[in-house]
Length: 98
Length: 464
Image (cartoon, rainbow over all chains, first blue to last red; front, side):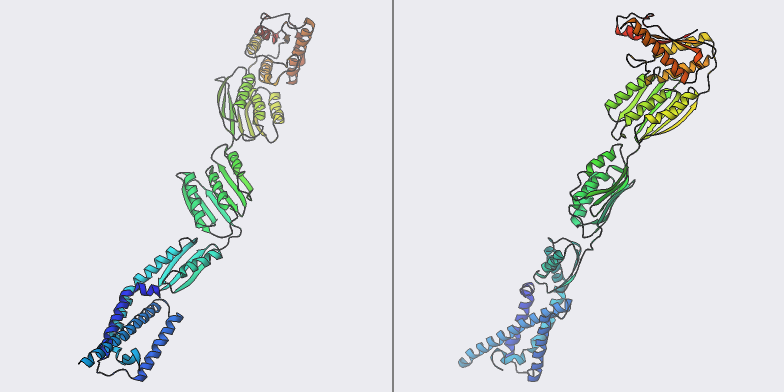
């Protein structure tokens, strides 16, 4: 894991920034979100992929690409959470004043 | 949904660029990652002894194929690759090299090259053996057909290095180690090569033994040629050392009373044992021939030429081999020289006198036993006697003036008689000869010097 983080830090930072932007926008986004049912399925899919990566069942290059994708996705999620929280905090501070 | 996941249903739009980013990252990073892991895995194997190592990386999975020389080495190789940071899985395709039973190694030399074959225990020892072969054979092509195998005896490298030194001494041949038995065959470059190799084999490491040493040396050759026209005896070939050389040269000078000895002998090791004991009587036999060649090749003595009369030929054919040390073989090809034309009494006397001026019949000191060195001269005298069948000959014995007259006379008489007996034994009729002893009564030189005395001690042939 340390090796993956060290070797791909630029890409992971990129993923985090994408997440940050998506999270920042999500707070004020007026469009339709993902339905609850679908998001459960997506969560289940993500867990299945994590399980596949941890059990090392996917061999060779696809295995590496899965690991890389999951780590990038984790960074993206972290970015999203941070971005949304940050936007929420900023809005909550400026709302009473406005 | 609460907390940071409150807005998670609207995070999906960023996933699309994320997937694109992921695809680019996978596309650009796979090859560098694989080469990085391959490099680190190879570095991790640096201290492990392996053969035919192949490291293949796919993603983060390393396939390690190699031949290991022990189970422990095999496991430690896999473990070292597993600990390389970033490696996810190691596909273990390592094997133990096969065990050779018996463990056979060989070095074979032919005209142009040396081939190292069989098994070597480790890549390092294989390299060491090749290097040693190239160094000790300077310039000769060294071909490597060695495989790697387990099961080498202890101290194999030392034994093989010692034997590589020996292959340099061979012209052609093969040296084999089978477990801890060493076998050698072939032909050495030099005469003393066999002895040198035998001496070196005594230094084989503990546990090794020589099963068969069939190394042969080029034949040890000694030659002597008696040329009746140039009146020379030419000696060529080898003698073991200077002492034997001197002994043979002295024997040749005594036995060949009229010939000049041309000495082209060289000293060399490798002579068969008993060399001098065989060569000296063989030279004696050659001295009895009118023309002849003596070739001593290892333990085979070839004597060919013309004897002066029948009985001499028979004596040489039947008697010479008995004088050889054990192991020596005689191949005699002796013919008899056609008899020379008869001569009259005057010429006969002249011939006797000429012969006895060139050489003297010698006896054991103070006794009447003819020494064997005089056989050549006696044969000449007998040949001459055969040429004058109608004359009677007095064999006259003389001594120097030392000692009392009576005993001198008796000794001279006995010596004359011994010569006569020799002649009769050679086939001459006894009634043509009379043996007379004159003691010191008829000196030919003054008896006051050793030289004069030596001249006075003599046998004369007088035609009556």
